Length: 264
Image (tube, rainbow, N blue to C red):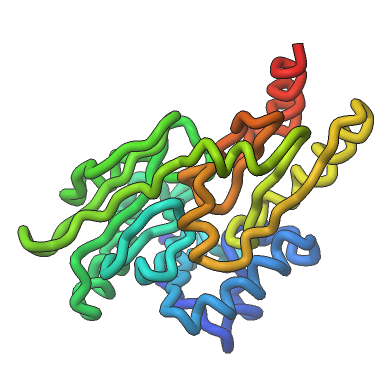
């Protein structure tokens, strides 16, 4: 039996029926619940969250991918992209990978941007950041790199006309990093449901080493765009006036090892 696929446009009426792609098996966790509430608020600002809904043989239908995008004025990355559509996330998993479904989801963002007469579609990518898509799918669709930001972030854009403005990264400011003070400062927003997984373990480690620890919750798109610490926008960890983590780690031990390294 062939797999059946469709793209589901998530809205406030069907979000509980279809759920989210990330943490879909852990719906009771704080990260998942916070993300659902965050999406409901962002829908008012033009956010689109579209699931790749798949029925695999005789299995129960489930999501195997998604795309999340929003008008640039309300984007949650560290970029200035007014009059652009900004993609936050694009993922495909399982046996439907490499079958063109990523391109189909990407085309949804392009189509909606054209309907709204925007300048184009922009996306922050990274070859080393596990929370962001890689560049290849966008390059194949005609996107070009228009900006980059240390340590490993790139901004790709698909312009609809030569007269279009060019999106850019907002600057990382030393004074913003220094304002975090001594100890560990963790920036996070509900846009990523995985970030809460690291808060308590990092806090526990910091307390065990008598290191000051604080969490700064990013609650608006303007704060995310102008956090001036991480281009990722919704996450970053500073320790003693230095940024030690720019994007969500593969394990908590990565963060604790970074702290140990800075301490010695």
